Every structure is written in structure tokens, then in C-alpha cells.
Image (cartoon, rainbow, N blue to C red; front, side):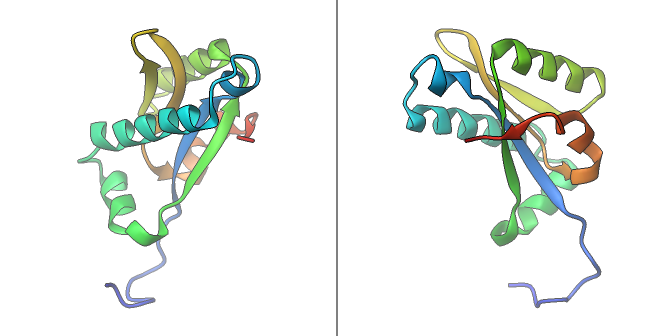
Length: 127
């Protein structure tokens, strides 16, 4: 266990997860199923970017990881966000539920908040 204050000031790394809110509100998915989708996406994003420096730093602080779960109103918004993130070189995983092959959520690899917040600022916290 690391001693408190043992290193210099650390950057705030955050893993953002964006979930379709219409899965619950319009499509009547059970909340547990929606949470499962978010867990799949977050795990996949970490796995795909495991050797990334920010990911390794994020995982090293196991007891103080920061995640923010946001909501996208529908699949079109989620897909559009994924396209924008891809265009801007922001590493993420768009989770596709199988066998339906529908986008349910996406998760970014851990990033400094200020790096990715501009792409997510119009989204609200998931409720």
C-alpha cells in the first residue's frame, strides 16, 4: 500500500461510460441489464488499452479509480458520439449487444478529465 503523499501531485484520470437512457425509459430494459452493458464496455475499454500509460496509472490507483456514467438519449446519439471520438483519436469501445447487434453504451479508456470533457459536456449524468 502506497504511503499517502508519497509522490508528486497526480493527475485526475477518469473513465467515462456513456449509456443509452432509452434502454430503460422507452425499451423497458431491466436496470441490471443496462448496468451489465456498462460493465462490459468499461472492462473492454480497459482491456483494449491495457498497455496505455494512462490506463496503467489508473489501474495502479485501484482504491481511488474515478468513473463517470453519462446518458445518451438513443442509439443515434451514441453512434454519433462514437464516430466523433474516433475522428478525434479518442480511444473507446462501443459496446454492441449480441445477438441483436445494437449499440448499448460506450466506454473511453481512462483519460485526464480535461482531455475528453469537451466531447462529453452536453451529456448529463445517467439517472
